[in-house]
Length: 392
Image (tube, one colour):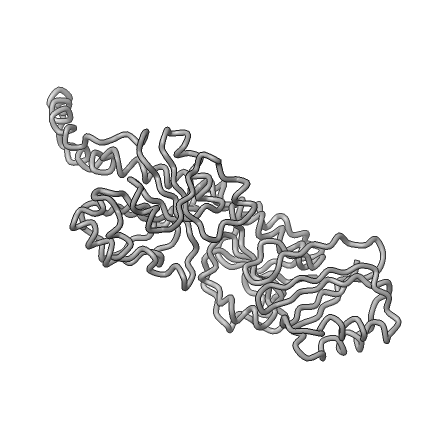
């Protein structure tokens, strides 16, 4: 029986994936094998003895001390793409808000609420609407920084709206490249993307390398009146630089899902209260994906969508037992492990080994169940982080 600590409100559809005869879900487990959460901020203290994995029902993992957990052999999962449609739709709403004076028009009409005569109200509406005249998105150029699950979907919508789409992503994966429309024009640099776009939307993760990426120098490259949309992470943008760009006209609008007190009252700044993934569908999709990944890892040792361990899958053999072993990515570890198994006459049926940065991970299917002392011998090998047995 695996104990799974649930933090935040996890969608019921995801919780139902855990079979009660194998998994015990609780908000109060003190020594869980797994943690399932959304935005709850974990600390090193949550990495209790026996914790094997963390499932983040969402894409960002800046609420998890990933480096520390990696050193302890704890696999951290996220759910890329599960909330992509929800974020995509909000980005489109942001694009429309930047062009059509929707927010300002609503505010104007709300100020007419005391007007009881309909004819007078209509006259005031007709007289006032010229202040909110906007532009159409068709024919404009959208720059997409980051062409992963969300960025590629935004690009597709923009193309359908008749926009020209430019893209830049130095870390574009093969899978993402296959998803991307051939009509998206690849830019050679982020500076070129900013210089040639009428609207720019950000879709990169919050990493040390992307913190403050949009700064004064980069904003100096944009055309006067450019729109910047940030539904990725607040840390990507230097708010002081954005404030200056709004005030000097380099930016006409900054539409963000991350309110910042520095921008309150600044003309052209519009913020929503972190609504990107706040739909019933997105929360369910994230919960189900995170749950399925944790279940497969706990039951079978397979890893999919980990941010710190290699993705790895090995079909279960109909007979035998599985050993899951993680170690530091240094030479001769696997050879020592296999030698220990051979010395105990343990026959290996199948195995797979992969590494990612400083971590290596192994699944080894053996013909007969190893003893506790043999597993202890494997765990004692220098640079082995953890070992666990996965019976059928």
